Image 1 (cartoon, rainbow, N blue to C red):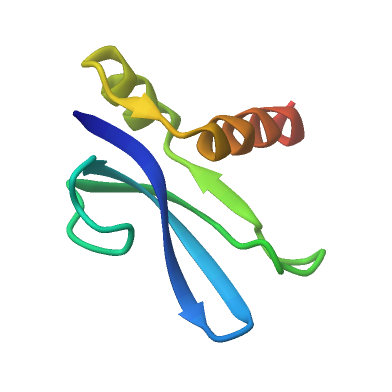
Image 2: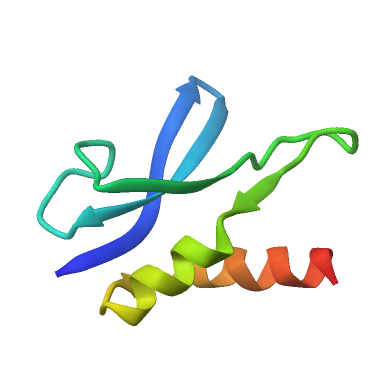
Length: 83
């Protein structure tokens, strides 16, 4: 199964997450199919904290990819800030 989930990057105590499409069996930070966005939880007011390619997200969901609960929450948050 294909899932849309977060892959952690960054340094110790400075997290940065990529929103990736990956096979469910791969490791959290392992191989992925496509990177469709990012989430920076410690972004300042002047920096962008979340970016998601909506067209790629809808494509992957249309072909059966399941988003994690955290990614669903972040997508809703991004839609709310964009509106």
